[in-house]
Picture 1 (tube, rainbow, N blue to C red):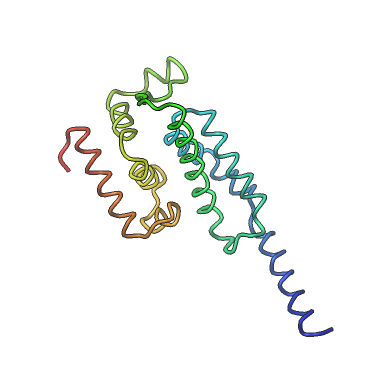
Picture 2 (cartoon, rainbow, N blue to C red):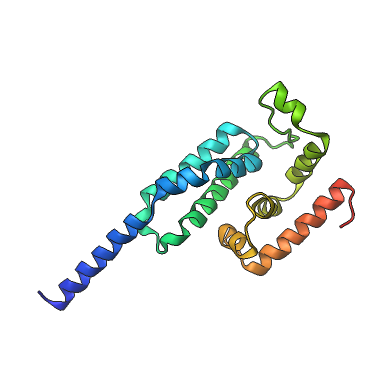
Amino acid sequence: MRLCDVEVELLSQREALTRDRVDVATIFAEHHVGLVRLALIMVGDQATAEDVVQDAFARTHAGRSRLRDPDKALVYVRSAVLNGCRSVLRRRATVFRRAVPYEPPVWSAESAALVGEERRQVLIALSALPPRQREALTLRYYFDLTDQEIADTMGISGGTARSTIARGLAALGRALGETL
């Protein structure tokens, strides 16, 4: 056996190990609900949010052999969900050239009664923020991600993530009439 053949065999074995290490089913089981909630905040309706997350997982599963770092599969899926939400919002913007006020989804009379006025105002103010600020604040305060995890998910630098969060909080405070 030549040295070149050994190298090719080792590379193929390493790729097989990488494919085996990326367990998309486990990531799905542990993070599906949270990712649907993230998408729901971004796009505003349950069906579209579920479609975006399902598509992100399907693409991750299909391309799992190409993931360079299997430990970052969840970051990749989060990024795919955010990108899917952005695509949905872009398509909606071209279809609807008028501003549609955001109303939080109401699934039943009981849940409508439980949703307080303050929470509704925060969601309305959050939906009025630019998408990048809304994404950063959602990742920070809903998923409790660190600045670096937010930066990795959004594909920006850590400093940009911090400044985006700060600007988003300031704008949210102004919209709610609070001083921070």
